Length: 128
Image 1: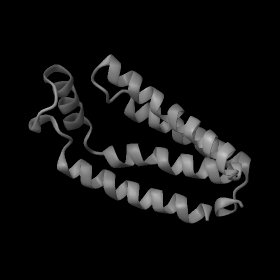
Image 2 (image 1 turned 180 degrees about the vertical axis):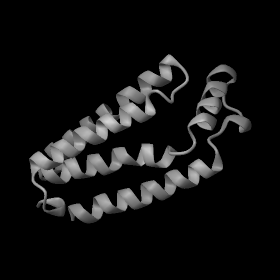
Image 3 (image 1 turned 135 degrees about the vertical axis):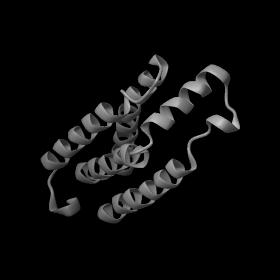
Image 4 (image 1 turned 120 degrees about the vertical axis):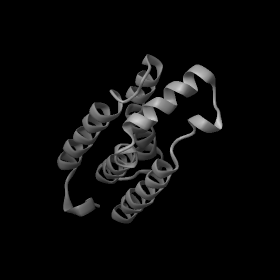
């Protein structure tokens, strides 16, 4: 199977570009060192999960790379436009613990859900 008719090399390039995009956009947004580390590790943890799915479920490399790429895109797309407010709330949460005031903004939560639904649905659709 070749999602969108692209071969493994094209999907590798897309996966690398998506990972770099994730790291360039999200890591600088994080207000503390520990959050920057967590954001930096996220795409690699997702890649590990994709590798395990490849081995366990015998998906094609193209399908795994397409699913990885679209799933990693959920985060920058879902958080777009909410950088300052999210950073402020994350910093407040680290300093004061979880409260109702430092929950993620409702608009970002809705945007993240829409992004996850659309990109996740697209990932499933192109790999079936």
